[in-house]
Image 1: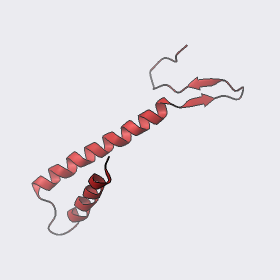
Image 2: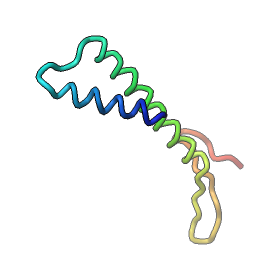
Image 3: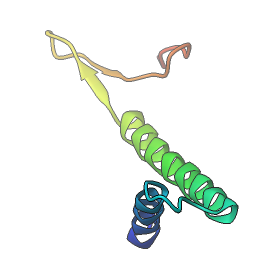
Amino acid sequence: MEQKKIDRINELARKAKTPEGLTDEEKNERAMLRREYVNAVTGNLRSQLDNTWLVDAQGHKTKLTRRGEKEPK
């Protein structure tokens, strides 16, 4: 996600705390930007976890799997 969009999220957060608050248009923009940010963070985390291996005490590597998935053989 671009830094410009993160800055805009922060700007809207600061404005929401002021007495004037946010307009309906700004609330919608904030919701869309927040959703985009959450999707970006989630995607980055998934990518990182997809490339993670567990190593046991004997040195055996096991690929980290998602909950409910069977371990590859």
